[in-house]
Image (tube, rainbow, N blue to C red; front, top):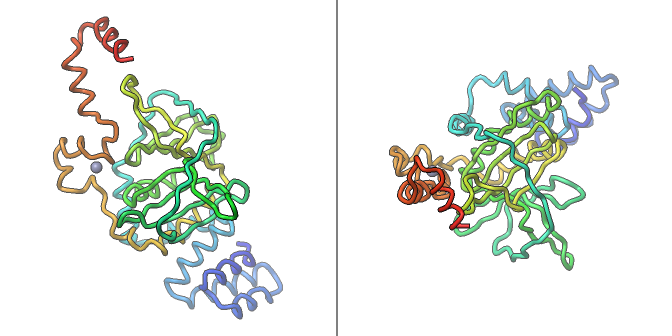
Length: 310
Ligand SMILES: [Zn+2]
């Protein structure tokens, strides 16, 4: 461990006092600084333990932070919920999807409510993790902003997460990190549907994470990517990872967020098919039209119908 940067973040997060931080720095060797830091943390209770995990992440000492996770014998209610969310997600990739990033158009929208947080994920491109009240709910965003007359405004280039969707994203973070960490050895493309039109994808071609809204034109079998999304490099992803802890603190509502898959309405298939989070592209309607209008054994007539729709 490199104690000095870790101590700096521990102090910034008010886990240790300024005095304690100085005590650590006054130690002469790296070994004795580490010992001192750990002794202080042991005296700070659970807050000290979680603070240390967070400070290690912020100080880019992720491997050490992971070791602490393994020691965590009893997962919290929130962590159990993440594990539950993970059990509902599977890789949806069958064939390669190429993402086309094109011209920058953006909407300038006045925010009606002050954001709970706006955490910078990149110093150069105005990329932020935000949480803001919206129509009685809290919406989390990872979004590029733009400067105008000394104020910043959200652009279209970003992703919106109602809280249950955020849970489904957050439960993937460990796997995403592993994938990016071992990117050179990756062969399989990964793509998870986390709710609404939003997909999270990883590809062996680029060492980046893509989070994006998709939509499905009537004439397309597969949902296609839109410009509404973000592509995160490893360094931006690392900043996002450490920002997640701050987010949990300012959005305590995450603890009460419910996964729709566990809802009674989802006990039968119809409930899932009419849920806009689970079935955003009207799967049910599409199937009905196809089976009514086309003879399944007659590929030619199906082709004609599809061409008429075009
Ligand atoms: Zn649902």
